[in-house]
Length: 246
Image 1 (cartoon, rainbow, N blue to C red):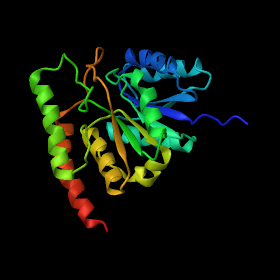
Image 2 (tube, rainbow, N blue to C red; image 1 turned 30 degrees about the vertical axis):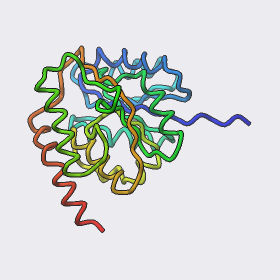
Image 3 (cartoon, rainbow, N blue to C red; image 1 turned 135 degrees about the vertical axis):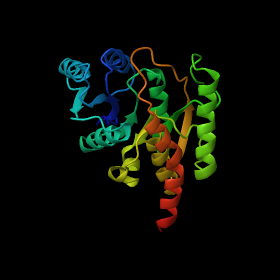
């Protein structure tokens, strides 16, 4: 009897990504990953991304599904909704991936292979391990801010990873269940940090593989001042709450 391949579900939140989404769907379809699925979580995009996602789903023979949400209330909430749906539908591996093509799809097979090779709980696509890099288009101050943010987070929380704010991740389903995903309430980059913190607190293993992070070509960045402020305060809140728990 041939053993079935693990079900890998890539969760992609979207808001005004109608130009990028079909490109990403094509890149994923070309990967050598059996039983790969795409779950689009659209937050009622005004530009019609949800309709584009529905059209892609109709042509995908069941490999693409769409979760429509009625409002835009943050990246973290979109990811929790999508990852929860993926678990409900039997995912063995859940991948977080941005829709803006900044995360290189070509690295995904290595991430999944690394995740499934041993007891690793989550694999990060990392800009800051040997072989990784940020976009050449980034100005020096943006690169400096990103590097400082990772140093800041690790100094406070001792996560032991180079890219603590990474948003390209491959998770084992049991890891997401172990960290109590539905109880996560942070957003933006702080969402990524909180998930890492929960993994580390449970003594689980995080591994990093190098990626080249690309600048988005189409559309606008979703980074707001509010998200930046929340991200700066989040490590202290996590540290405080962590000390209160047994």
